[in-house]
Amino acid sequence: MDLSTSQRTDMCGTLTAADVGRTVTVCGWVDKRREHGEHLAFIDLRDRTGVVQCVVNISHDLRSEYVASMTGSVRLRPDDTANRDLATGEIEIEVSEIEILAQAEPPPFPLDERTDVDETIRLRHRYVDLRKERMQRNLRTRAAVNSALRRGMEEQGFVEVETPMLIASTPEGARDFVVPSRKEPGSFYALPQSPQLFKQLCMIGGIDRYYQIARCLRDEDLRADRQFEFMQLDAEMSFVGQEDVFAVISHAVAEATEAVTGERPTEFPRITWLDAMERYGSDKPDVRFGMELVELTPIFEGTEARVFQAPCVKGIRMEGGVEALSRNQIDGLVETCQRWGAKGLAWMKVVAGDDGPSLDAGVAKFLSADESAQVIAALEAEPGDMVFLVADERPLVRHVLGLLRLELGKPPVNEGGLHFLWVVDFPLFEGIGDGGKPIPAHHPFTMPHADDVHLLDEGGEALLDVRSQAYDLVLNGWELGSGSIRIHRTDVQSRIFELLGIGQEEAQSKFGFLLDALRFGAPPHGGFAFGTDRLTALLVGETNIREVIAFPKTQSGADPLTNAPSPIDATHLDDLGLRVLPPST
Ligand code: ASP
Image 1: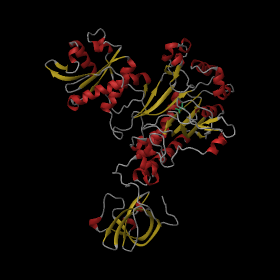
Image 2: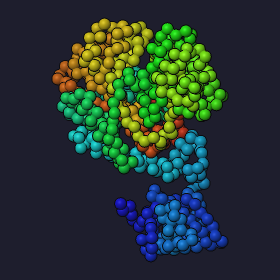
Image 3: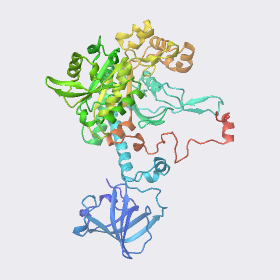
Image 4: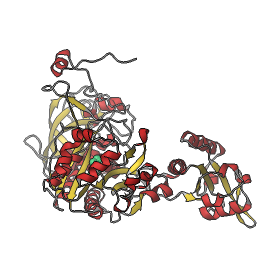
């Protein structure tokens, strides 16, 4: 692509031996400077495409990060000085004219990739940080992901519709960010946790296939894969079942992946939520590696060993664990599992015996010969392996072993390929909260599984067995996004609100507009949304989404660049009818 302008003829990083003899003008930042005697200097000039070596033998005052324009002729570097690692390494510019376009203070940190710079300092000077090759690459990849997603959705007939930022609350399970109204002091807009309700209204409005790369805001604790504001590819479609949704989203994700990696993922396997929990102890399993949780409960029915007298016993096998783990590390794992809530972690070594492998050390002595043999067989354990067992209530066993599996086996972010996975048949409710009300696992507009609707009338614990038509897309252990088939009938929606303890009045005041709309002819519809920050991060091999966001917040939610959040002045507060209370102690 030709990026020349009225001020430059070429980009720094694209000049090659084919340009030898040409007179060019390049513009950029002084990357590195090497002096050779009084008047000769080698200056690497950098722009977004890379660096080019400029040979300067006229007097100049160029310093690190100065912005300059250099004109000169391109020549081959002497043979022994060519740099094969650099795209422009064969050539240099013999500079005849320099113009300093802007001076610069010394950069607050070195711009190489090797120096580890404190994040707050990086973010305070993000405009300098963005000059790094890594950030340039990440932001360009992000743009490529977005544009491939747009193309992928549009070629499937999706229409981009923008939905408002100043709205009433949309429940996605997080706290709302709110904006005070000046016209109506004491009243607040909520910023969207997602465009959920609007996209459903689009379906009722006959849009048929909606999408948007939408900014969502959720006031919740930040983590490596979570920011207050983040972007989602948000989609909704009419007259569909979940297979239709899987097909269109898989297509868009495949487009984006191919655009970045050059390889198109062809497999988007399915796993039920229950299977994921039983086999991986997680609803976002990282299936790049095995080490699955193995059911051992039947083996210990009627066991004499007190530690295994529990409703559920499961185990995992670490291949070669005997070599790989020191006694100290094993003790550390036991403590970690206790921190995760387990009473203990039973570990044993698999050793070779005359009659085949047997269990040794740890709790091995508490097991009967038959139990040992069955554990070895169930885990398919070989001499040299370590086995780890947890016995407790089933949810706790899954949770602890799921985490232990990751601790012992999780590959680094950029290894093991990209493994997409649809997790289906999520439960409708994730638990029973205070006051006996069920807590929705997705949002309250999710359609229950047709076969389980009758359980809604039973109430109580039976509600936890109600499956929903909700699904997640998982990539390498990260939840990329969620979706569901929606309730499109007022009576079912009212029933769900009732179960959730959202009374008629509250439902009317919060979601009356949706309930009203459902009465005016709602097509069956469903959709999905997934985080484009997360997808981009995984595609470029970053472990923190902040690395693929131009201006992110720190872990504590602050922006060291603009100093947000910051107090507003008294007049502004007055206009909004607000008073700030002194901080509670
Ligand atoms: N609104 C949901 C979310 O943001 C996605 C969906 O159900 O389509 O998680």
